[in-house]
Length: 219
Image 1 (cartoon, one colour):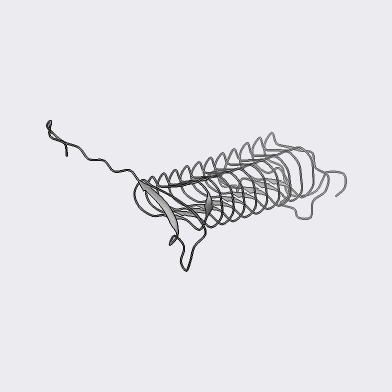
Image 2: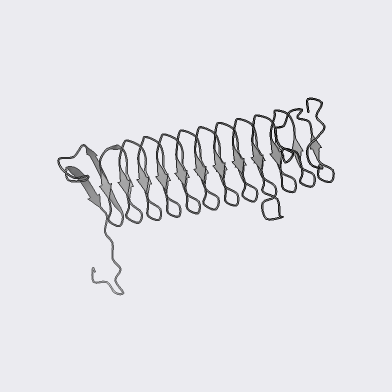
């Protein structure tokens, strides 16, 4: 309906200002939910908000996905409790307090995970971060990928700052950039400018090691 009416019942104290929808569910159906503008948007949970854009969804109803927020863009979904999608296209924030700021086809699916932007990035573990770039994955707790493309941080506290096709799979490991480097040892830093036959076979590495002693004799 072009006059803003129609669709399912609005939630208690909800505000729905959009005027175009293609399904009866595309309304502000959650209690105190809000849709500010745009079309075909849905605010399904308690105090969920969609500011504008097209075919965005905040919340999933049922009481477990409340307080979600979508700022705008197209085809974005914030379905986790207190999750946020700022904008962009086809971004998803599915976990509690997860954030997808923008970009395209990004997924923040870990608890308190963040994807800043870029394209087809995934932050799937608790407090993992992908700042940007393309086709990057942070899949372990506190893992980080700064940018670049096709980089993977798959161990706790592992970081790939940038570059291409790099992997930090050791706990506390780091790849600062370059291409085709692998840091798979504890605390290892590795960097490369290419490979011969296999990833990591032409790289430089630094490994910091430590031990403890119970007396004055060095360990």
